[in-house]
Length: 89
Figure 1 (cartoon, rainbow, N blue to C red):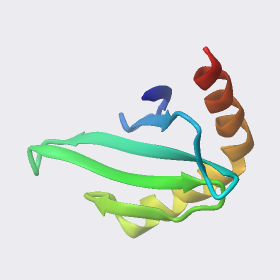
Figure 2: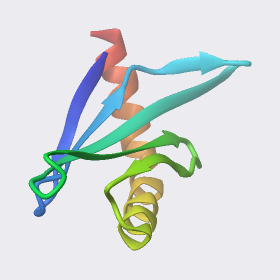
Figure 3: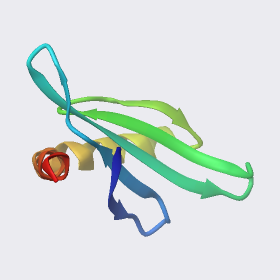
């Protein structure tokens, strides 16, 4: 299940997953999506927290992906905590 996190000024929607556990570690998948009129499709990318890199980048520039990756790393503690709380609800 995914939960809304925020909407950026350019219309990009950011959502995060339930806590995923693997090898005793917790992970959260963060997805980014915005509508692109020129492509008539969504721009999208994903980041696996903690400390993940942007993957599956379609439509976003390398600079946009790097910028959002930096933001996600600075917010990862909050996102992980929100995911834990939402997973318990």
